[in-house]
Length: 115
Image (cartoon, rainbow, N blue to C red; front, side, top):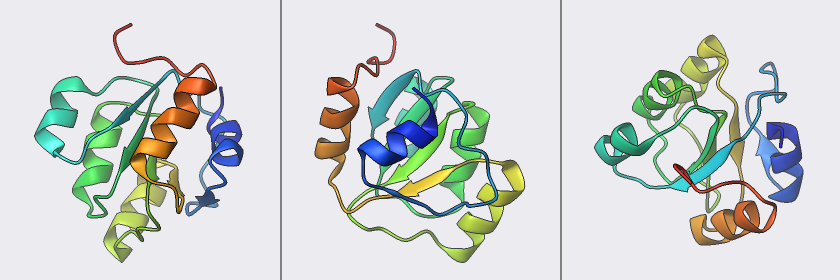
């Protein structure tokens, strides 16, 4: 599934309008501990988090994720948004909880990492 398709499923807003949403979401994840995400992140991942600081973009780019999904209406810091635009990392924002986001991704057939 493409990031744009996931955006619609989650009823999310695209916060990085200049960034392509054509990347493939191959797996989904939810975690707010960056060191854990570094250990378990995967290429193509749709990552649901409440973290909004610039290090989220560093982790998502390093792991070659498909997108960052800010849950519960969390807004990114200005520096985070600027870095996401610079790196070409899509940021989606939704009012849904991380639990809801993961349920929607799972129901839509997005894989669990490593399975």
